Image (cartoon, rainbow, N blue to C red; front, top):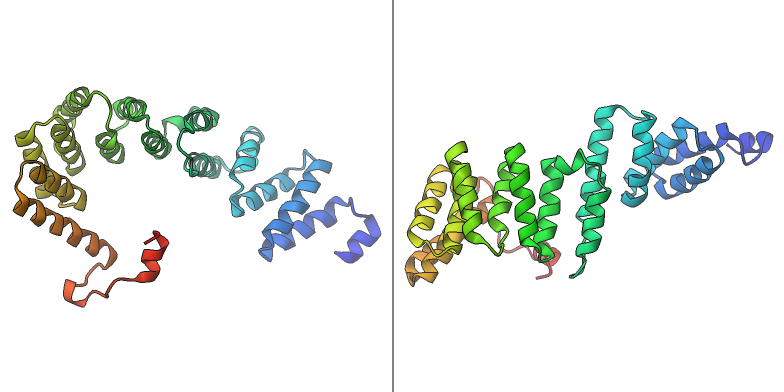
Length: 277
């Protein structure tokens, strides 16, 4: 590289390309990004430099700059279409999932609008955006988006989120979910959502029926926790405690699959510290 620069100067395309590739191979990603940013400024139409710049930005999780480069990458077919689809989804998903302070709804709307229209119909991105809407205190907007998306493509992750969106019209949400039940049949996710919505509408018997059916199909910690809340509200402390214990047991099984409770390790303080406990 030193000899190449000596013979051709610092603006040699070949020398800079080799330097950037070597830096990427050596996992010197920040140095590679600096080299490629300079190279792109000098040779904006150089396709391989753009491809390497995309790779450097991806490694560094430089999502904002990557989002600016992806439309050009698609227009010029710099990467195979399937790779671009995944990269575009990952990039806009990461931008939508960035931690936001309270009251940042306009920023969230802007990030959603910046995503390509085809991505705004993808269940993965819809799930991320809807969850952020719920966190930002816009559950009705999240519920409307989820319902509209589910009309076009059934996805049980979105069904669960619909039950978590505590909108101002729980009766309307319950009616919508019951229409899905009539069309799509019974599934643990849909029954859990129906149970949550029925409980929110103070329809205790229906809520219990839905939740018990969900557990019968596929026991989940969420369904047991929801039943615990239901029994607590009706004053049945013994049943509430029983379902709390079952929810906890299922959570432990997720962390320690294949181990009995007697053989599970004790609390892992390193894991707990990751969650701020």
